[in-house]
Structure formats: structure tokens, C-alpha cells
Length: 183
Image 1 (spheres, one colour):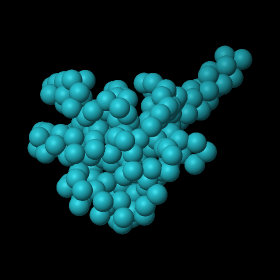
Image 2 (tube, one colour):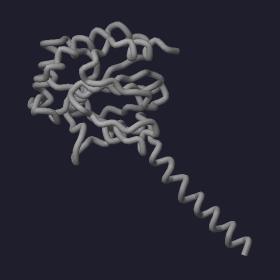
Image 3 (cartoon, one colour):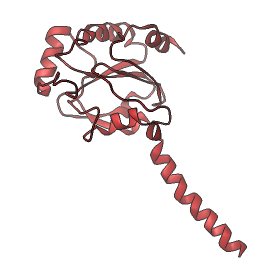
Image 4 (cartoon, rainbow, N blue to C red):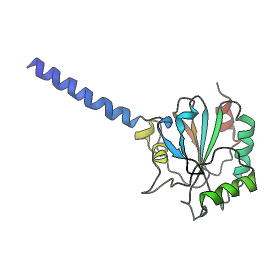
């Protein structure tokens, strides 16, 4: 009888471990597509602080591209990177193709930080990365809803979500600057 109980306990543990590890993925477990459609392994960013931002070209917050670029130019050499994810989820404010978005960002704001292919950041077709960013069951930190364009998620050097900043808050807010400069 003791052997059966022991075997059952062992079997339960073996089943529980993979389920837990699947739920606690890190940011680095994802591969996305860059603005040119090429695979972009987020694991290549290990050791960097990452600001993930859903963007749009025809939004009242679009001028934040300039603020993001300035932040990237200032701190990009200090193990910090910004990744832009164009999305058309809010008021159809990102209707363009990836090529049009890339051109818009470069011509109007001189964007040099990595831009990814257009995705969905909410709803039934939410991108797996954004599902992870917005679900505590998956990221282990917090639930959130992407409420508008230019919402910012902070990822630490270990691929863990550490915070979020609302869309209307500019990228040079104290919360983000303190996080970047914190050792």
C-alpha cells in the first residue's frame, strides 16, 4: 500500500512540474517577427532591460515615437532596448502594411530601435507574447489590459515582467528612468 501511495505521489509531481514550468515562461521563450518578416528570437536580448510598446501611426500618442527614440539613443548603450509592436486594435489607428509602418517611423521620427511586424495586442487574435504580458497566470506577476496605443511593459534582464506604464504616460517618466538606471 505504501508503494502505491508513493508511486501516486511521484506521478502527481511529475505531472505538476511540466504544467508549472509551462505557465512560467519568460520573455525569452518567444520568437516574434521583425518589421521585415524575419524571425526575431527574444532570447537574443538576454541581459538587457526591455521596454515593449504597442505602437500606431495615426494616434494622438504617435509623437511618443520621438520620446522613445530619444530614450533609446540615451540608454541603448546601457543594456537597454525598446521594441515596438505596431497594432491596429484601437480605432484603426495603424492601418498600414509593415513596409508603410517602417517607412513612416524612419521618415517622421528617425526610429532606430527594433520594430516588429504588426500584431494584435488584445482580443481573440491576441499575439502569444501579448497574452503572456497581460496574463498573471502566464507571466507570474500581474494581469493587465492593453487599453490603448503606446502602453509600455518593462522586462528585466532575466526576462521577467516587472511593470507597466499607461499609454498616455510619456516614456521619459520617472518610473521608467528609475527602472533603467537601477542596478
